[in-house]
Length: 427
Image (cartoon, rainbow, N blue to C red; front, side, top):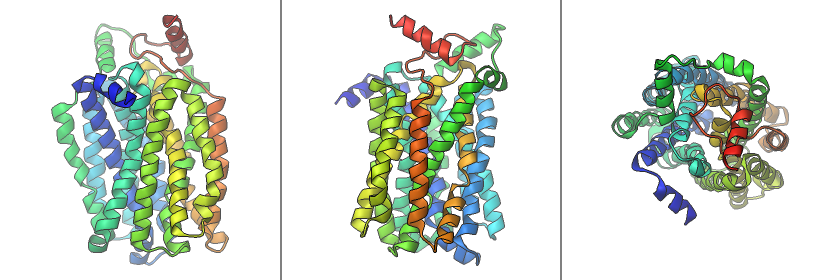
């Protein structure tokens, strides 16, 4: 009831921004996760192995920092709204083109370009939303935004479950062009970030704005820590998601329908986890919420990777994604609160996607590890997640926090200064 009350207190324009950003990330994730369901079939089409096809996932993730930087800089200069529309159009067009790839090389190239477009969406959408809503709603809305990621995975699971037998892997990519329709909603209903509009007025008055590289130099410790944290976070999510359908299908011998059904179930857990810990973080702080969620994953690993039947595997996967995406539910608000004001369109997305770049080896690493142990995907999944769950907890627990900092009011201050100012304003 408290959640519904908080949502009702938002204005209509604020709710529309949340809807647009949530759908943008949902549909972006939908387009990304189509790939993880069809690795085996792509390998068969092009006469290669699964490990070779995972290079497409690796390059998608590796190119995301390029998009985060380019589109983030554009968003800080021209506004969040027009850049978000451009992002959605580009990733939809490249997803559609992937369905026509004549060779594995062409598909890998298209997925790399898709990674550039995908890399820009999260940071631009999150900054637009966080700068628009009131401070007390940030935790809840952070959970809603990040729930877009498992929502996209859920949507891909449903499409795979229902349509794949009829349209094949190429048709799956073609369905991925539908997110382009979201641009019509954004153009009609979404307003520009108020904080960005204030900074545009200040810039027009001759007030000097800090650039991204100057902001990084002035906050080097924060920047390096954020990249390390997001590296661990991306291993945490992709290490539990990208090869899990392949594990279920190849090692456990489950049918396409069974894999799709389990994926639907564990993505429901992910959505619930993101919302739960986003709300919790508003009460106990961002760091504590992340630590608790990431540590929950550790005792779940045996059930998630080694359960003896499909029902228990589904339960383990539900609990694992509840924990993983629970921790992730705090990330949008956490990185935006830590970001210097003048570069909020760039800083959160850039640090996030640099972490993705480092973690982009995950699918290939896990596939190679499984292959070296006789096709034991369970071993590869368990080893990686045991390590990165601890890494997320340690990096978050001993890191920075700026919960409640005000956006768009004082230019050029560090996150620590902004946090102290906010604390003093609260008495």
